[in-house]
Image: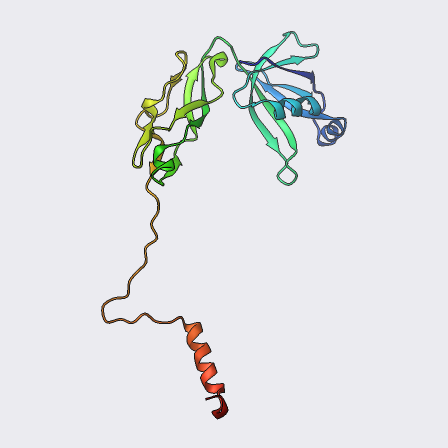
Length: 223
């Protein structure tokens, strides 16, 4: 597990105008939520947070918040929510959730397929990823970045179920064991409807109109 550190400062700016001025100085408003205690308003450097954001997968990552003048030297947190500007996509606000490293958590972990299915490579089938995430329970320090699913053996009509996935010993899968994670389906066939017996294949109306137009405008010389 990576040790991600983010410096932060207590935040007194609460009103809209104060928060706007704070953002102009290069900060993002945030809040730290902790079970049993009041929420703590903070602010983090936009540059520092974006550096973490672009270089690490922050989903399920443990971030050690170092808050200036805080009684705790470091707070182990996970990102609960990031609010974005609906027009420009800028980060408006961050919610952190303080966690205990000795208590298990329930989180969703992304699925990553490994290999190329036989049913796709040799038989022309299509790979269908049914579950992009799997719910697990474990200590925060044991959360895997992703769960690998080997699909190389799959033929058309075959699938990998949750119960077939092998996870690290300290990780417990909570998703339905019978649920399909990935499957290989047969290629789609284009169906051509044949005309019924005694029924002629009609030409498109557009072609008919063009033929009639030519007939009406023809002259004796053109025949």
